[in-house]
Image (cartoon, rainbow, N blue to C red; front, side, top):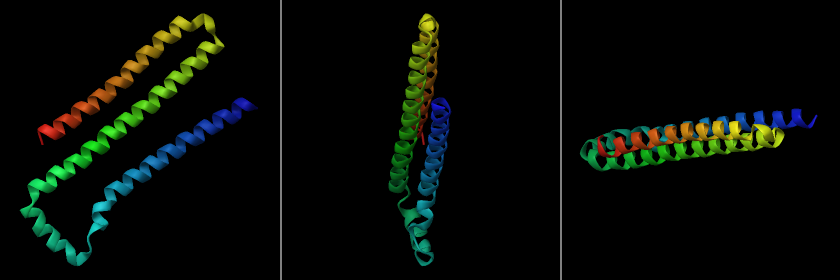
Length: 129
């Protein structure tokens, strides 16, 4: 009974976190669209052409912050889940500790590699674009 409840809670938490992430992403992407009214749009477009260097730098900073933040948060959540499951597996089957630890380290390396790829993409955005 307790295992079924734990599985249900974990699935519910996963669904809620994905929904919250999607909602946050939608809000971030929609914010510029609602920032100016219809009559202000032409003035903003004219200013954008004049200030393209400064606004580009600001938008890069926001994009870089969001990208590396999401990569770090996703990696941290993944590492936490992998570590917790490994500890659970070792506690259930202590004789499999070496194999579980090896798999744990491999999974952590792959997760960290994904975070490093995100860091490289962010560095490219900063210095190349």
